[in-house]
Length: 357
Image (cartoon, rainbow, N blue to C red; front, side):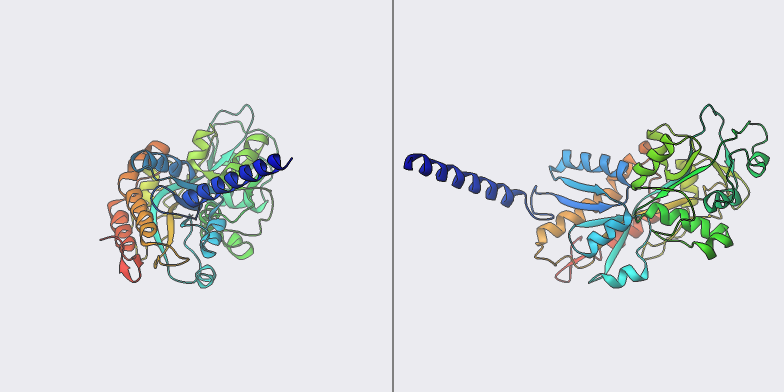
């Protein structure tokens, strides 16, 4: 009996040592060497990031664990310093900036389109929508797909006489920030009643978490309509509308029309919105997305190696990583956006000294 107990104790001790050894090798939010980097935030970015981080791992053996939880959750986790970087499709607002301890850098990493996707069984034509129609659908004022206002801008198609069922994000979302920024610019009623931000009180509709959740709701609901990232719509074979822009042109969301919308001056801090662009061929519901990191990287016992590993990853993303953008229906960063990103990234420090030379 004593021998059995002794053997059990030995096995338990070995198990504990094994667990502790594994934790030591893989623990921490970012670690050194091959332990990896942890990020969280934008689901808008997730298809692109999945490709980028897979390729980066193949060449460096550094694992990047990215959680597609929405921009709001990513900002929250960065604020609490439980991740190495956040990702957001909206710049942090004044309230969010006041909540963090330290300066946060916004590095533009990609640009993309938020599309209006719909589910009309048996309908194979594409739909055109004006700014007013988009606003009135999401305000709940237009309730049927064959409403005369929609029919007037789609004269050569037969629209089904079914109810419109709106889907929107239930979580804090940069995709929502882009979409509600657009609605606030084109609709005084929306601006006064709802406003804009990563999270708003939606007048109507069903809530889904992430681009994945909204895509699922639209696909499962006859008459459904929702706003999602272009890559999600393409990957899920979902139709999406052409939207009339400020110049009066109906624009199909694409790499080219997002690039046209993003052909603007980039401010030094990298924070700029692309919605309701002046560009004649620009898609009007476009937006940059940013990687967010603390300017001073010496916090929470982080090592200089960890800080260097993180900054090198982001530097790769805004340079070599851009080659994967167009293949996944994101707009590659312009030369001006890359230059701005470089300058911002070079301001990141460890003990007050620049990390990226």
